[in-house]
Length: 437
Ligand code: ASP
Image 1 (tube, rainbow, N blue to C red):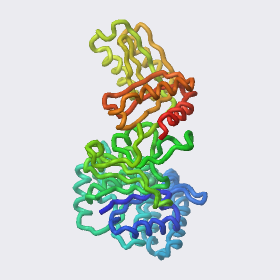
Image 2 (cartoon, rainbow, N blue to C red):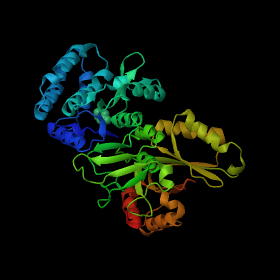
Image 3 (cartoon, rainbow, N blue to C red):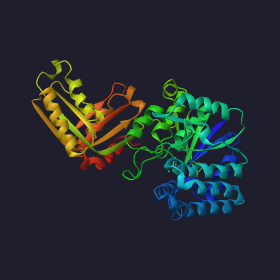
Image 4 (cartoon, rainbow, N blue to C red):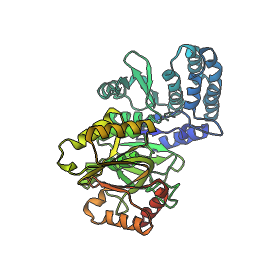
C-alpha cells in the first residue's frame, strides 16, 4: 500500500484537484493521502500566505480578510462538481472563531479544508492531523505521534489527512515550518506501513545540478537518504529537510513524482544501507550523483605555530562559536592552522567572535574571508573510484577558478569545495561539464 502526498501546486485549482483524483484512482494502492493547502494559481497567492495575512489582522477584521479564502474554496468546490454545502458548515465555523483564534489554528485551516474536499472527491475517510500528530516543546513527539497514528489509522482502508499541522498536549493546533506537509506524509507513510511514500510535486524530480545555473542538468533517477541530506543541506530543496526521518526509520523509499507529468519516472530516494548492499541499482552509472552549492559563507582562518600539539585548541576555538550561537559548517585544518566555515552573520557578531578567539587561543594570525561559496560533489560512487577530487580540482584550475578550500569527510560521500562567490556559477558549470551528469 502507498502513502501519497500532494503539494500546494497540485491542490491549487479545481483542475489540478481533478488531476489528483485521477492519479489516486489510477492505482488502488494509493490509499493514504496527505495534502497541502492550495498553492499559487491564476495570480492568487498560496492559501497559507492568505491565512497568515488573516491571522495578522485585528480580531474584528479577520472575518472580512477571510472572504477571499472562502471564495477560493467555493470556486474549487464548484469546479470539481461538489456541492458548496460540503464546506459551508466548516467555513462558517472558522469565521465564527476567527476573532479568538491563535495564528497556528488560522494558518492550518488551508490543509484542513483541502483534505475535506479531496476526501469527498475520493470517497475516502477524512482524518484530522490534530488527532494524529502531537507536538511538545522540542517539535513533534515521535513516540506519541506513532501511537496516535496507530490508534487512528490502522483499521482504515483509506484516508485523506491534512498536512502541515498537529496538536499540542493542551488541545491547541501547532504547525510545522513551511513546507511541513512533506513531514506529515512521511509520518503517515510510516504509520500505515506503506511500501513507498510517493511525494507528488510540480517538478520531474531532483536534478543533478541547479537548472537555473546549469540548463542541461538532468533528473536523478535514484538517490540515497544520505545523498539527499547532503544535497538538501546545500539548498536542493524539493523536500522538507525533516521529512526523511520518519520514513528512514522504517526503510520506506520516497518517490518524487510530478502531478503535471505523472508518467515521468521521477526520483526514488532509497535507504542508504539497502542501496549499498545492492538491493537497488541506478539506471545510469555515473561517477558522481549530483553537484549542489550555496554562496555567501564566511571562513575564518586561524594560524598558530605548534597548534597541533596544543591539547584542546580546536575545542576552545569552537567554544567561541558555541557561545555566540554560530553554527559551524566545515572545519578543514592543516598542521599549524585551521579554517572554520560558517553561514554569513552580522558584522558585530563576527567582531565578537574574533575577539573571543584571540583571547581564548592567542593565535599568531586570524583572518576572515566573507565571500565563500561552497560546492558539494555528492555520490556513493566516489568511494570505490580514485580520482574524483583530482578531476574536480583540475577542471576548476583549467577554468581559471581559484580553489579556496577542499574538505572530504571519511565517509567519502561528498567533497566540499570552497570558491569565491564570484566564481560560484562558473564553478558549477565547469564541474557539471567534467562529470557529465
Ligand atoms: N501549506 C504550507 C506551506 O505553504 C505547508 C505545505 O505546503 O507543506 O508552507
